[in-house]
Length: 351
Image (cartoon, rainbow, N blue to C red; front, side, top):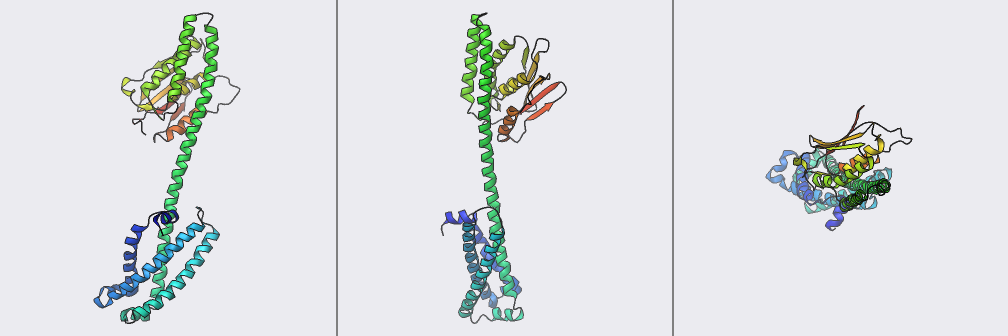
């Protein structure tokens, strides 16, 4: 039976187990049956006889386990599986025991200590054989379920990662049209009043969308590049709200070569604008700063009286995406006066 088939149905390459397990089990079973006398010169053939038993039992039951997993290739252990493997193990045990026992008796008729031991302890062989079979079964089943669970966990993580990426891409597609709609409304009001400003507004809007298209498929982006992209976005917001919004950047230059999730700052700032009052009497203040390896986006809390309940899709997707980039969680905190989001800063772009 080829190695690919063995790994597929046993869940691992068992060559190392065969090389180590069979001699070790042979010694253990020999001591169980014959005691420490098995190491005497005249008793050493007993080890050879036991080794033959171990080899035959091991390979026969190994083949049985492969057929068993070929028939039941799922992960659940139910009644049908239990009946199937139990009945076949008993049947195979009886066939091997009497078949091998007859052969051993024929090949080694003069193994005096072997048969004297059975006369003193007639059930020693049966007990040791059952223990050996149980040991082989639990080793193989334990390894199978251990490796199967690891494979399922890996596949689950891959699926979650793909789902998180799909959600984030969906979020980007949702945010962009919404932001474009507001920007075009702003542009309509600017054109009649200031043609030069309108041209600059279109230029910054173009830069914002060009950057979004460039980084939308990136897993991570440097803070420097994110801030460059955010510069045009902030200009559009300030033009739109005319002194009603203040964005203060206190991110130190020493952190600019670190990494965060692309477009995450734009999403968080847009959320702040969406859910808070932005007016001359109540200007929205947003702070960008770094503390303890976290990039913090903080705004004063002045919630709108919204007819709808926030789904927090943006934060949920950012959290899901960060889950696969770092062990640190995205921290979200709301006080009576502030709403704070802390994004973990990632040192390695290949995280």
